[in-house]
Length: 121
Image (cartoon, rainbow, N blue to C red; front, side, top):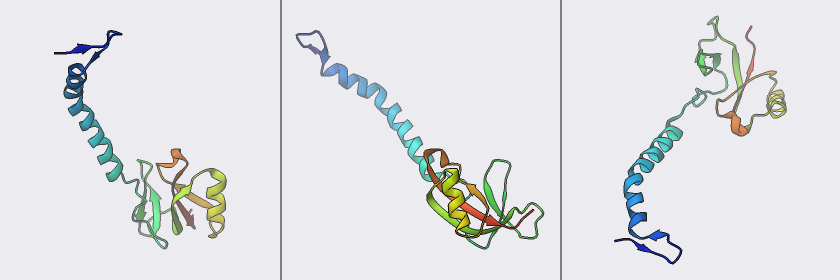
């Protein structure tokens, strides 16, 4: 039975019914979002200085053999959780002797992974 307050709004059972009805759906959406956040990989996770890289069709950076014609250069520095605005990336890579950089796909939020590269074509 639902009770009504003086202003006519329902309490108790109606709220419980709403939670029972939409709770599992909201829980499933939350679980999916957490799963995606934990398992997302933009290709920069295993990069380290000294490796040669290329950019794939999916705009992801991946390692290749340095003699590979698709190599865009050798990684000289990798900074995770760095500011990814143009000025910050240029300054960071210039400090490590690089004028070329890749930033992670998560860079829209203002921070991400910056990969500084030298050499290549």
